[in-house]
Image (cartoon, rainbow, N blue to C red; front, top):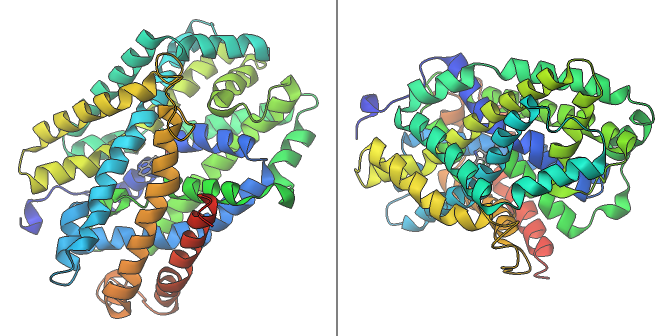
Length: 453
Ligand code: TRP
């Protein structure tokens, strides 16, 4: 396949927005607050920050770089950049294909809850600050097998149609708009949450004053998994987006900007949620339901709450679309480029596969609630396997490849855009991190977190 026939992003700014569109999503609004609440707050946040800077950012940089160097999907990329005969690096791509299906299986369900909440918000059905009432509404939604499945299908149908339109048109157009609005709305929420009586002090203490005793190996693994999940790395997603990057795109700068913007959205979500948790007497460790109960409560306690609440869930739904498109792009690019089945059919097969694999996850609070594998229901299992096992494993392999096979001269050439950008100490730092630090740290965290030791 020749380079010019591939679809790609049309402007440098478009690249930044699409990459940001992949990173920012339910991970910020839903996963980050739930995990922070369940894992004890500030200590978890601290480990997550360290994991993002020391491991996430360098992995993101080299993963994107590999995709742009090869200009291909996650499997073909390793066929092109690995030395002849070292076919096993392609496992990264195959694992990414599987990880995309697993992540989409639960991600599409959570997106479905968000869509459902758009209508509930508009109807005033979730305007309450009472933890009991809020919990009952959420419980009724997720424990109904029919609505659970239908909302998942709505999400898959919608995003599947967008992906069929193609990279530049579909992804860029959606990612470009509306995100600044979500940011502003989150800021407003933070102000309201912080001014709730009795909220600010315990909320901020929970979020920013670490209790080191709570940092167990399992907590560290979860934080690492979140760092990968947030930056969309470890399974070929950033690699696939990198393959659409322009030759003059500054990859390290783009990755750093996306990382910082993504972090600020998560922190805003945390500051919007935790003061309200304490002000209204919610349970910080409530898990996946946390956001769906506390955010409506904050809106309810402010003027025009119903309108803003509706807008908030619409924007969150939009944010989830950008992330979902990037997830779908991994299998779609693999199927269409490697199996020549055309973008439309590749999208259709991908969506059908997710509907199949994802159904048990959608039904995790109803029909499959008692189906436990390793003590987890399908929803939790998919999340755990993908975020905490496959993404870190993929991350190790990507680091080992970039650090030991691809090597420093290639890294300098690729990250320095063939001499057009400075490629000195920063590239060396990335090289050092991916060659020695990240694979070792990820390996240790993975083995301890999975209780292999
Ligand atoms: N980063 C997105 C979020 O936080 C989710 C996501 C998109 C993702 N692409 C990914 C997660 C690839 C892991 C791998 O919502």
